[in-house]
Length: 253
Length: 230
Image 1: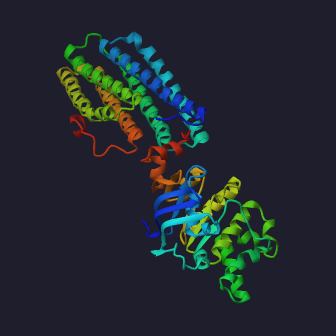
Image 2: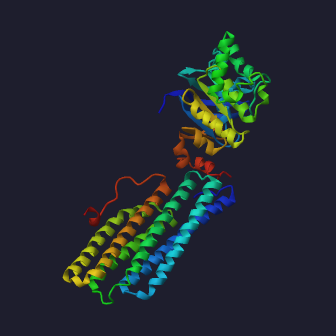
Image 3: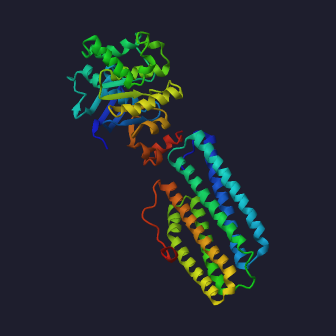
């Protein structure tokens, strides 16, 4: 098993009065895909949003407990959130390219993070990122066209390319295929398989089959609690917890 | 299984699959009883009926295959449902093989003389009775999802091996007394071996049931009797 990259300890999250996460202790391994499953509102998205401090933008949100990346606490108030988000990229449910050219979508991040100072450096970053996101061949002749003109699946790969353009260590994916057709989904899954050689990936998904296909570790959340976590194969063949079994077999009333 | 599925038709499809396996099991058991009876009583009139019942068992096997394919495609079963589906596939395969062996034994009745000595058939009957009991017990453990009972069947196959050895020995003794017995004695040897093989399929079923219930395979090697070690 790979080293632990991200460690959450007694993590609690509150939205105003409402507690969204209860004492979550979860280790995410380096260069592995961890899938988080559970019914809507169970806290899985809240959990991944803690990893790049996206919850900071919600005024009523309060976080207690710890999240460490490589042993360093990221809930520290003095931590530079911009540089954290450079290390922890994110891809969302709906592809959300900037209303800019394909090229600019990718080069924007490196530019604001001070990477790629010359045009040729930026060109290289754009090409490499698009190649890593398995999109280069499809768009190399129209880099100046708007990113929003691509198909849904291509847009999502563009967003993945954008996330990896700043050379992150972790990629968070919040239901990245829910708006895509099966072929585009297959391409993203294939890509995830490739990306895990370089990055630590956390994916929230409502598709059990997808969790089985892409992840090595799976965590099941329910009502803000991490009910069970383990090797994906074990979770889907023979989970220890009855609640996990009821959820994955479709017995949740 | 505990709670019911949110999707009722899924629940029904799984129940229907399990029912099919149970029905196939009970047909296989009747066929084994009939074929044993035919051998012991040298009842040549029942041969055709037993052969025909094998067709029924084979039809069940195809039906179960189709049900499983449909379930896999439609439901992508997980955890206990996945194990239920896969064990149905394996159990139905073993039942079908037991059916083939019963049929094969029924066919062996034809060349047997009507006046076989008591001691020769006695040992074969004891073996047959044990195999029938084993099948009955293993099916019972499937219906009631009884892990301990399935494991007991698995362990008891040792006795099947021992009785096979004894039955074989008595046939060979009989054969060595008079070479004229050679022709039908060979059939009895094969019939004995068939029962031992049916016993092995029953232990496979027991293993499938244990996996179905606990999600892990039985550890260690099964106790083996005399016939295997030879």
